Length: 312
Ligand code: GTQ
Ligand code: FE2
Image (cartoon, rainbow, N blue to C red; front, side, top):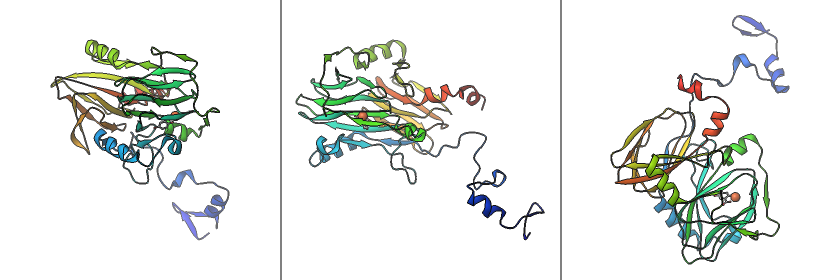
């Protein structure tokens, strides 16, 4: 009985015995596991479309869709040891499909969507056999376990941003993935007005009417989409919030002010991540600016934490 704890003797080898049986004393945790309010590890960070375009253009000389499946650049949150997520539950990536290319079909449990930045006519995604055309400003959903493959049969490069809940699916350890048996799924129908497609032209009209648009509410179980329009000088403060948000500017110029980054100005195609429990403010810097917010709000809402967070 050489060891004591708060003055009481501890049997010899007690803690070693616990460890051998894969126990850990809950009264002497190596690190606390609960705290009064969120302590996010993820940090606010910014990515420039111009940087992504330049790098993807370079990559296209040596990365083919045959080799890569997807020619994409992942926006990795710049915290120690992170190699993938953009926010705790979501990942965002810029993707390039060149004229004449097809990114082969597959399906996976992660939910996904694309926000089209640049594309000529003749770019489309085939979702579960349905050919869905895409144009700049459009959002296309590929819900969990839907087959999807992307083609560009026009003459301009197609750039978009993918958003997926892969990190959430990884934390649930529920990843399933399958390549399409025919490599490129054939379209059995053509639906330019598919309910999975939310046209940029329609969204802009709605934003000009009502400011913020809840896009495809419930269309993806884990991801919320909010498109918002901003007049010059229009300003709004937010947070702290329990959802983590990734914003992509689709037009004009928008300033974000957030601790750790200071004030940053984003133009079309630029992306900023605001992890949960960070306060931030947004300001429109052009006559008309717009952006898309992609968040994990359906997850935190489903868990019922919204009311608690509002009391903190
Ligand atoms: O286009 O299917 O950026 O499955 C990451 C994973 C895109 C896609 C990404 C994907 C896709
Ligand atoms: Fe995919």
